[in-house]
Image (cartoon, rainbow, N blue to C red; front, side, top):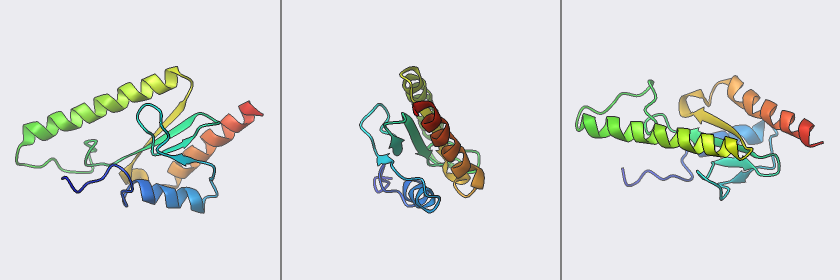
Length: 126
């Protein structure tokens, strides 16, 4: 578990970065220094995108380890609670927060949702 990094993860952050780039969505900053350190942020538009790994956030698409089950259930609950607190705090301070699950990266609707958020914020800013 110590080898799992919070930055540069191939199945989450780098995968979404490649999808954003292919879709022509540019201008983001990685790990912008605000609460929660979003994986991708458009600071001028106040958009934060978090890519949540399915295992670490207790997604139903992953199985819970059989050994030390109570620890893992508490860990997943703690992670989800932190996600909720960070999302609420950022939204209260005017940020549009998008959370993307690892298993949803391959869905076209994921990039579409981010593109719509960017366009709607650009329209308001103009």
